[in-house]
Image 1 (spheres, rainbow, N blue to C red):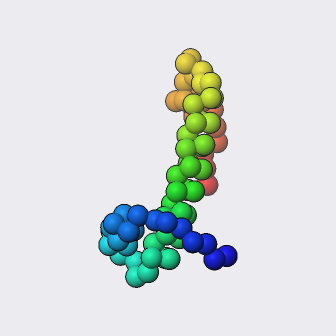
Image 2: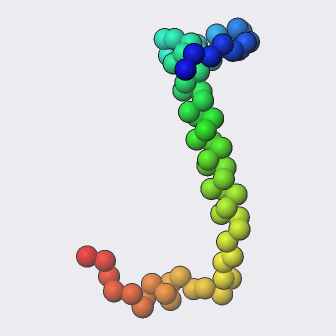
Image 3: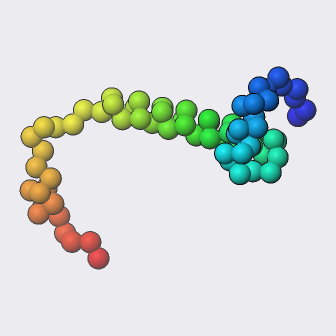
Length: 70
């Protein structure tokens, strides 16, 4: 899909330099992929804050009751 975007030239040149990629297109593609990954990771981190953990759980005691891994 062809798209015309008005991207700040200075910002794009710096992104190309920092990324080490050869083209503007590759740089923008990688930047978008990383942006998406970070947003998805943020959703996971936000979800982790919603779990409730037992303060009285003794992981050592729980481990003693299990069979060893083989």
